[in-house]
Amino acid sequence: SFVTISAVQAAGKIFSGQSAGSLTALLLACAFSRGLLHYGEHYCNHLIAFKMLALIRVKVFHKLRQLSPAKLESKDKGSLLSLITSDIELLEVFYAHTISPIAIASLFTICMLSFFSRYSVFLALLALLAYAAVGIAIPLVFSRRASQPGQEIRQKLGQISSFMLDSIMGLAESLQFGQGPKRQSELAAIDQGLTKSRSRLAALTSLQQLLTNLTILLSAAGMLALAKSLQLPFAQSLTVTSAMLASFGPVSALSALSTGLTETVASGRRVLGLLDEAPLLNENAAGDQPAFAGAALKQVSFSYPGSNKPVLKDYSLTIPKGKIIGIHAPSGSGKSTILKLLARFYDVQKGQVTISESDVRQIKTAALRQLESYMPQETWLATDTVANNISLGRSASREEIIACAKKANIHDFIMTLPDGYDSIVGQQGSMSAGQKQRVGIARAFLHGGDLLLLDEITANLDALNEGIVLKSIKEAGRGKTVVLVSHRTSTLAIADEIVEL
Image (cartoon, rainbow, N blue to C red; front, side, top):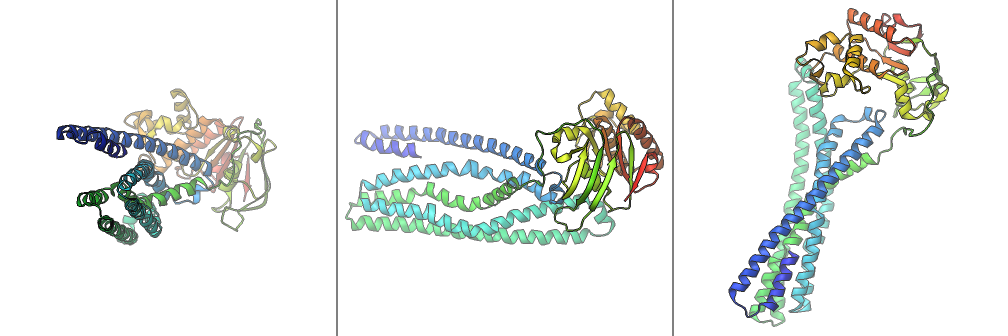
């Protein structure tokens, strides 16, 4: 736009008195160059935007890894999913459609003010006030008023994402207990709230558009009246009035941008809020890297974040090297918490958790992960091949993967799948809970840490599979230290020592 207007102004001097054909050729050249420059502007803007979005996604995932698992256990997974996908995607509006319109409007305004000042300084001043009203004052007023509904829209979209995720995962239970109509009504209530917020934002957008158009028309009328009062010739009065009416494109784009950015700003706040969140514990990039020589909890007191109820209080436990230690207790007694503290998923409020007499807070985090093989109660499967799910513990040959699968008594089942170890499985529907658990056991075997932390690993297994898996643990545990947590006494039959909580 700036190049086009400059060229036309130059043409007024260079081609005054020239033929209509020359002027037509110039206008065609300007139109062609405008198309090329417009393409270049969009290409560069979107290239920058997409590279920025990719960078932000990486930063967000890195932050989630820092916050996990201590802080992510209590976070709404659907809201996080909405943030990682739609919220970050909305930031494209800012990076691709904000900087250029501002630059274009600024250059265009300077050019037009120069044009009007050739006729009168007062005409240029009126144009400046009109451009400021349309491009700055009106957008600022309405962006403040639209901030709250924009924030509400992003929050409600996160709620819908979370609700839908819960509903899909619990679809069988909802149908079994006749809760389908209730879930539908709850979704409708959330959706009605979203519709109200969007209606408020749409009303503000319409009102802003109305005031913008009214300001443009009044400015054109004011330009005509001012030109007449300055006693400009009719042709010049018509020229400046037409120029005024036609010159609001770039600043009008800024006006429309303000309400369009409302949801983008709200998304940006949600993303920045996550990036600014401090983890409950910091990983050690450097620190002790001891060889495993036993573990212990020494006078440990621990409560989960946000809870005043202690799970463990002045609790001590010694885990000698080369032994299988069974921890037996009813649910909610702190069995799983002990394993999480040994894995340093949380830091204790009082006392010490030690590996080889070194406080786990002083051990290099990567070294601690290598020392331990932790298997939680629920096994997570990536949407990937069976082999890749087992080798999540470490890179391994197919022979090593098969050997660990046989120890976990899952090999025979895997061979019944269409592509064997290359079959694609996932978290939902591909395997039963017991089969997933045996994949998790194979994963723990393959990792090969000196300290195996096993949490209710036979909870979903029948008696036959339980016996086979426990025999494998007994054999694989030779020379290793195993902490086996269970509320089943049969599971703890292989333990050298059983601790009651």
